[in-house]
Image (tube, rainbow, N blue to C red; front, side, top):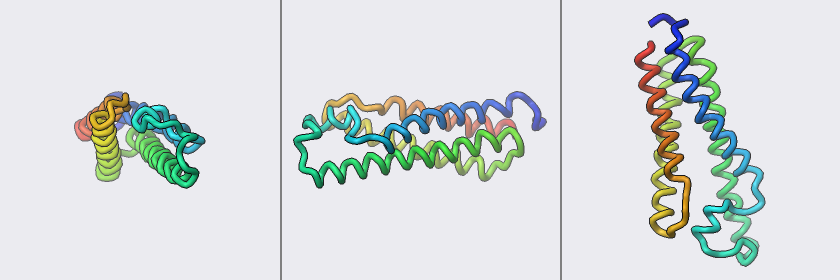
Length: 144
């Protein structure tokens, strides 16, 4: 398929859409002053009732997740830009595959948290993002 074919843009658009959501999650995670609402529901404990050192540790973990989402955003934006311009299948598939694996892992972990605590967690969104990225990977192969 020629490089200027419109179908070459679809994997880039798909990865861009997941990247935008990742940026939103990065900002939320990195800027938070306490755990996220689904963390609170899972713990069934008020944030202020926790010892200060535990709050610091939990905030560290939430912000680490935000940092992971920031990295995911940067990688997906690079793929979104590079895919239509000069396809490098190995690099593109490596990034898309890694991002898919992250989202699958996130889906598994948040689904586990839901089963263990009954809290509403974003597991469906994580698996949906993994599906979008897997589709982008397949389409990028098909359009080379």
